Length: 350
Image 1 (cartoon, rainbow, N blue to C red):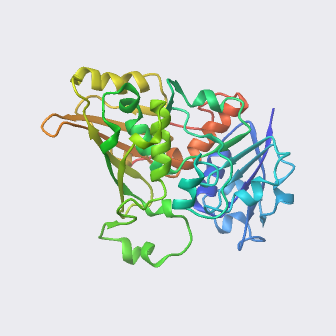
Image 2: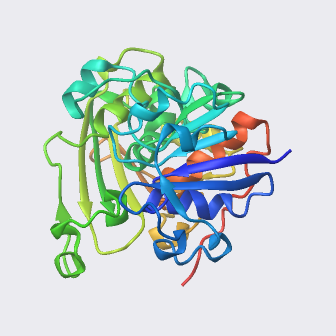
Image 3: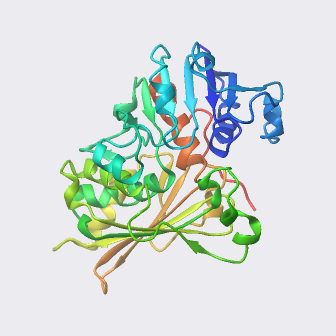
């Protein structure tokens, strides 16, 4: 069976990456692409690397144009998806790459985003531990999926095994991330200009203000099956001069009486059978270059007994595993297709 697809926000980074992956999917027909200010222009004027889609023209983003497809992807700025999802009730599968349907708590939404709160959808991180099972079980047959925040899913995947196994204390999590500016979207912003980025590293959203913090706490609370109050996260992202990528260094205190073997076993048990989340051998740590273009999260684990902390270093491509790859992987599960269809673990080098 071939599924017809519409992609909104198709002129942006996330929309373009969704299109790149879907263009190689044998079960998908990309029928419609939409935008706002760029409507009426050829798609390749904004995504010149997508040569196989040169026949497509960006249309207006309206419920009427998005309706009538088997699948709709929404790759819109945070707070803009809800106005369309409410009107797409007849579309069999809708996948939102924005934040509008990620959070289960309206208080968290009000504190970090503001505006209208929309119902939470199935969270699109298949490998995430949720109450003793993997989130993929909640994605099979799903009709509404919230693709994750790239930073949030990276940190959550990094620490969920230890939190779920009780080998670390989730009340003192510290995570510092080196991130590429493509995670901030394609809109022109002075601080994201090449002249402002090259040769420097810039922290932002320091001091507990980043919007992905409640998403991380929600995911880790789901891993434990307990409340969110015991999950405390210090989260500091730093923009570095690479177009794509996240390198997240996350740590948490070691729980009392836990051995080194028990710590490593928690991560090995969680990810040994996973295709797209891979734990490297002891003493090895990933680079962002190793996952460029791949739907892979590579992870290195260290145990610092002097500081009594576990450190996890995880590398992802923020536009693939962080966003579009997670969305396509979740789509495959929802449709009953092979989970890895149109996705690869192989990066691009050099």
